Amino acid sequence: EVQLVESGGVVVQPGGSLRLSCAASGFSFDTYAMHWVRQAPGKGLEWVSLIGWDSRNIYYGDSVKGRFTVSRDNSKNFLYLQMNSLTTEDTALYYCVKDFRGGGDTWGQGTLVTVSS
Amino acid sequence: DIQMTQSPSSLSPSVGDRVTITCRASQSIRTYLNWYQQKPGKAPKLLIYTAFSLQSGVPSRFSGSGSGTDFTLTISSLQPEDFATYYCQQSYTPPYTFGQGTKVEI
Image 1 (cartoon, rainbow over the protein chains, first blue to last red):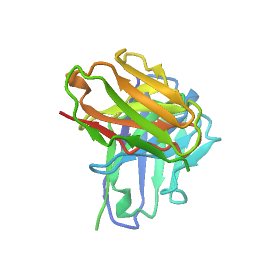
Image 2: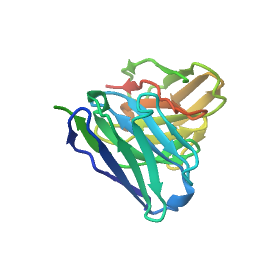
Image 3: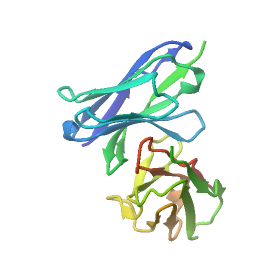
Image 4: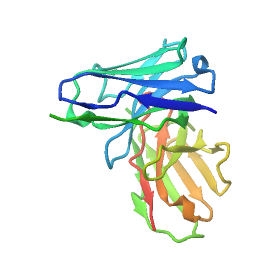
């Protein structure tokens, strides 16, 4: 069974940093691009980042560019999102998503990041 | 960045109705358009990819059409389990922006 399990979401103060993790299983992780997508409480979906299967191609949404860094460890089947200079606008449920033709065919359950003083 | 605009923002159809949701891109995205369904408290589910391809396991009452800048998601006969929020997303060029969502509610 294809599965994605996110972790690392906590309450953090504005200006703080956090690293999210996503454990992948049930598929050949090292052959798929992966996305991060977030959803603020009661709001719509916001695409955050994409990393290619070999980490050569990396892209970010405008609202996180320069503050967030996506990475992956294909030897451990893990995807990461390093989040710095967090603001209240970053409060959201963060989903790890397996790429399929540019979209996402498998989503994790999400991990909640709350930025609050 | 490419902006994606969905309409309507919400609608209240009846079971058995034909439902149409539109999505417009701010520039041509060819057929790089995906549709998702999201139910409360759940992760989104891929319904349609590359504008008209039905994802495996998705009922055939769902269909997608369009190319360039204008796209449509159609539910041919709305079922009770179809009440949800629907999102379009372009995957033509990063950032892979989503529409704002269309809530199909009772």
